[in-house]
Length: 152
Image (cartoon, rainbow, N blue to C red; front, side, top):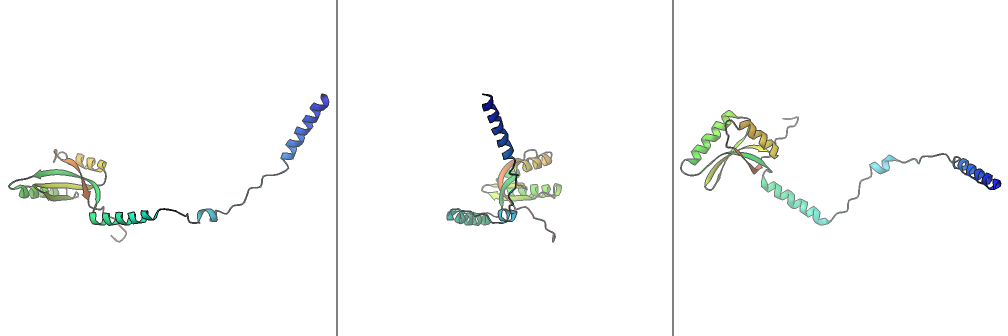
């Protein structure tokens, strides 16, 4: 029995010491091969045609989806003159905010701002609420934002 226990201890000692003979050697890898190689993308050919259609639709839209505030709408006799007066007064008070007059039968409408998000439109509403307390938010096609470059 003693001989068996001594034999097991010797085997365990030998195994633990043999495991230490092979030092760790990290494999040298080249980052060039993994980072700079282009990824191969497999996609349906119909995706390319959908992208072309999407681009054409956006070109025809002449703007982007966004929000504006409607500060005036009216129909009837003198509605056009009143709408022009409201727009002129607004531009005098807020020259930095664009104002747009549109006619959608039978109403003349004055909409202001080119807000890309609803939160931008709500901030604009807070800014003008003393002068125009009845202004309300409407989804609209807005002008593309101006891009400033070094040449501007």
